[in-house]
Image (tube, rainbow, N blue to C red; front, side, top):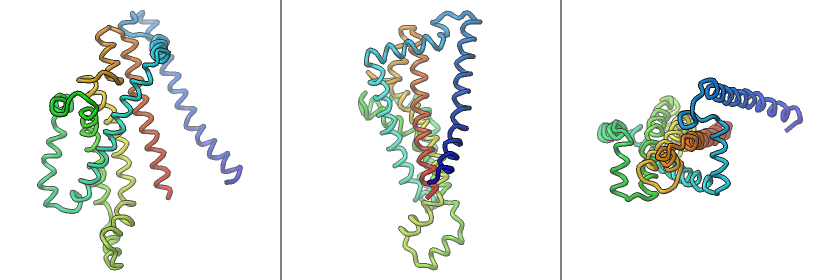
Length: 258
């Protein structure tokens, strides 16, 4: 890679990150101004400095990382399970109409029920441990992956399929060389939606039954009227969603360049 190409890449990254940093700074300034001009008490609307101080206190205690890591584990396992189930179901649903007519109504019905209604049932069945919270996260994450993968597999042009048949390609070769690459851009769209939803699923599970995690922190803050802790928990959840989204966006760019 030449020095010119390196300079172009660094300039492109700077052109992306500078507006983002500016938007974040503007948000913090507006937040602080609203608190000061409105003269809100801290238990109603704390300023960003109070939220930062509360998070720093948790970090000094050594509990911040423990709660953040607990939620990150639930989100990672839930998203992984949801993606696996979604992709495994997507292929037969995209290719066999009979299977779609049999299974699709139940899949749609599973998404029509609010996750906050399903989560207590999963905790009763599987206990208040990690498994139930992972299942809640997976249940809410798999559907966007499923729908996007079905759409991706079905968008392959018929003439391309005919070309592979004329070359006597096996079903596996057709999938690996044609269907999967063609569906990948659409699948990544569903993955990024599912990733953000998996954070919500883990949070819901922690609100109902958990002794650690960001949801537990927020619930604890609510019970103690510790509003800075609640705001801090919200920011921690947002950080996990943004981190996952960024990782998947980077993976998407890397995969689609090949």
